[in-house]
Each structure stands twice: as C-alpha cells, then as structure tokens.
Amino acid sequence: MVGANQANISDTEDEAMFKTRDGMIRVISATAAVTALTIGGIAVAPMLSGCSAISQLDKKGVAATFDGGEITEDEVNSYIADYRKAHGLEEKSAWHGYLKQSGATASSMRRTAIDTLEERKVIENEAGKRGIDVKKSDIDGKIKELRNYYGYDKDGWRQQLKTLGYTESGYRAYIKDSLLRERLMQKAIKVSNAKDSDVISLANDYTGSIDGAKRLSVITFDDSSEAESCADSIASGETTFEKAKKENGGENNYDGWDCIVSEDEAVSSAVKDMKQGDVSGAIAGEKLSFIVKVDEEVSVPKGGFTDKSQMPEGLYGDFKSSVELNNRYTQFNDYVNDLMSKAELKINDIPKDVPYSD
Image (cartoon, rainbow, N blue to C red):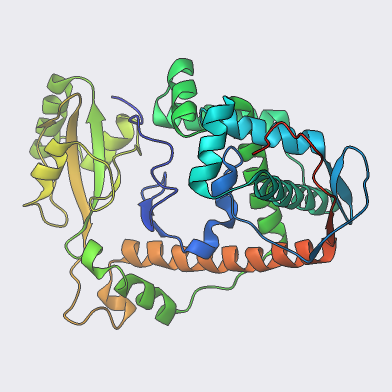
C-alpha cells in the first residue's frame, strides 16, 4: 500500500473549486484569499491598505512607522532582495527589465513591501495581545506535513519551492504568517452556520462541474497482485471494502470527488460506468493499482438545486463548509482592514541609491 501521491503544492491555491486534503470540495472567493498571502512574491501578495500618509520625517534607517511598530529600510531591502533572488532578477539588467515590463518603479516596489510588512507586523502584534504565537517547531511540523503529503524528498522540496518562486526562508515566513492568521481568525472571528439558501446558491454556481460527479473512496497498492487478491476477497464476501481500506492505510490522496481529484487515468476510465455503491475490481494504473468504491453520485435537477434534499449529503456538507469558510475569511478580511486603518501608517521618503533602484 502507498500513501499520498506527489502533487504540485500550489494546485489548490489558485483554483475557485478544489480538493482539500480530506477530499472535500472547497470553493473560495477572491476576497477570501487574505490567508493566501505569498510572502515570497511581492506582486501577488494581497494588499490591505489602511489610512496612510507620506511623512517628510527623515528618520534614518526607518522606512515607515505605524502605531505599534516600525519597518526598517533593511527589512524592505531584504524583502525585495528575496523576491529578486526567487525570480531570477538579481542581475541589474534583469531587474530593470522586469520593472520596465511590469510598469513598476523602485518607489512602488518599496511601497508594496512596506504595506506587506506592515500587515504582517500588525497581525503579529494583535496575535501577541491575544496570547497567540507560532513556534519554530510549529513551522517545522507544518513543512514536514506538507512534504510527506506531497511526497517530496529534501531536494524535490527545494526544487518545488524554487519553481513557485520561494526561497526556503521566504516560505518559512509564509508558513508562520499563515499559521498566525489561522489562529487569530479562529480566536477573533465567530461565524454562524450557513443558511441552506446560501449553500444551494453556491452549489448552483458549479452545476456544470459537479453534475455526474462521483465521490470516490480508493484503496491504493504498490503491488498489483495484492490488489487482485484484495479485490477477490471483497467480491467473495470474505471482507468488505471498508475493512480492506482500513487495513491498507485508510484515507489517501485519491479519495474525493472525481471531478476535482487528480487521479490516475486508469481510475477515471474505470469509474465512468460505475454507480453509487459499486466497488471495482483491481485497476492497474501507470504506477499503482487501485480498488475504488463510489460512495455518492451527483445528479443535478433540471434548472438546478432548489432544496438541500436534492443534494448528496457529502456534497451539501462540502458546499456548506465552503460558505462558512468564505464568510469567516470575509469577516477576517474586514477585521484586518480595521486593524490596519487604526495603525496609521506613515511612510518616510525613499533613500537615495537603494539597492533595488530603477
């Protein structure tokens, strides 16, 4: 039996509808991307601007101040240097070409860095007031979890980070920021249960993707002969699919809705003619072998869903969780915006001859 299959760690971040690690559907709105802050990439970090003003104060070494802290020029320089390194822009010619092509300037890049660093520090300050922190062991544990889940060794992990435009230190900063946000959101934001009407409305936005979708439970095997033996035992009644799955590792990365799970082509082909409750025989994939059960199947009524009873329980639960998650993110976004506006950012003039000059 094999565990999680290797995948791109950014797969779920950029899609409107995606599979989480529990095989659930998640639909995340653009405004909910507040927790998807990309520390390693200035240009894609969401900016939450508060009330700010350009200060004429020439406080040496300090790029900006806000209620509760300051941002140094060294921090700005390091932030932009990390971005340049991660994107292959360390050479002056490459950097100047990038600025020209993107329409950015040294001043605009500095402002973006300041806004991002301020937001991070404001959140850190608020988390500290509430007794929330993130230890080195928390970051190490999260990275280990991600590496194990996606099947990367150390070299593969470094290469994947490089592909995504992260330095290792930048990604650790991203993990720390994400954990702080998650813990602060859990403590500061309370969201009531989603209304049935909101869940149905969201599901109807995705009827084209989910009509005919099947929720799969999958057993994976390294050895095809083991898969065949297990399939025979299930077919003969000697064991059940559920018992066999538990004995062979339980939940895995192939479980979930077939419309969004990145599965082996052999599995996709095998489940086309399967109905709810059906269990396949042994399926020989490119690298693994599988046994699949269809737990639920979606049939969208003409005109869309009008009542929760028309939706499979698992599908309804997934969309309900998505509505509540979006509501939580929206409220957290407003919460952070309010913190930022109260911080009263004051930005000092840009020094001469900054290392990221245009």
